[in-house]
Length: 442
Image (cartoon, rainbow, N blue to C red):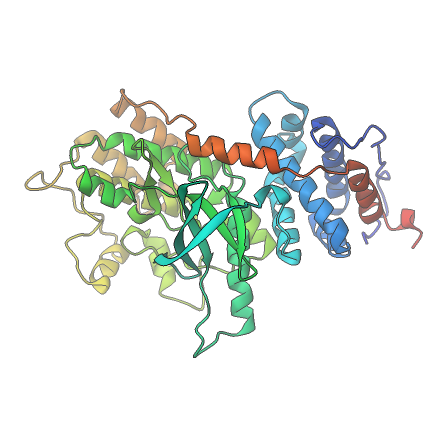
């Protein structure tokens, strides 16, 4: 229920042209404009509170609607479509992120994922091939191809964690899957969909046979390195453009496709504006070892005052990844002990420039750009799109990665499995849940 303000015009529900066609962008946009009007008058907190009162059936309808809004936006991005105009309106500053945050909250509350995420016919493997703080990675089979399965790390049976910690782990993965489903870029690993294992959601994505970029450059020392760096920068610039901070960039978090193109992955520690607003993260753990920016390293040492990952921190880290790709050395390779390289980072020491004797040299132009990214003042570091523009002239033969087979498969899956939305029901829900208190007779 929304409180009524003393002044201002009543929100009118101008939705008579809404029909049941799930692909009617105009109809979807009409509902979006209603949310915009209510947001302008009451704010998003009140919208969130109103959605909490919905029954599960209506919550699922709104989940499918918000998913449709975002997917339609991704399809029309850059066009002069009415939905694109609505989402780019000056009156909707930051609202794309907040719409995604509403979707995250609704999915988290019900455990119901949009129907377009559901994938059938996946055969999970049993072998564990990787693990992180919250998740395990296994291989699987789907339509004769190897796929990657990411599932929640099971709790320690001998010392089971508190219930709130278990719920936090669930929220982290739900947040990641919902955000990931809305990434669509040739340099970001696509999400095929989700399945359930032991009643828990599991992500399904392509399996990259070339492994991560650290292994790839070791196995292919003669391959050109700058194109990989540009791929990585393209992927990060895209994420930053989506208001997403990766927060854990390092060589193992960059995969390499069969075509030799780099793709960002592992968003388990990603921090987004949407996640912050939804309360899915506390300060988080921004520690990425040798790739961590000094200002984040300082705050890691004080667990009582946790910090959030930042775009400026990503810039330091992506320069460290570029250093790793170009030199075949991890940052601060001369320090073998964690305390040693941590101390070096804290005192503002930058990665050591390769000499060219027994390793891969980095030329002056590239080194100068890396040093700008390693500025000890975070605010003085360039934005990712500017770093990308400065790198491009250094590799004139580079061409951006095309949309590959995996991206096309992900897109086709989303289109084929997309649920039909009863937009008349959406209109009724919005009319009931979002109209002013006085208009509801209370």
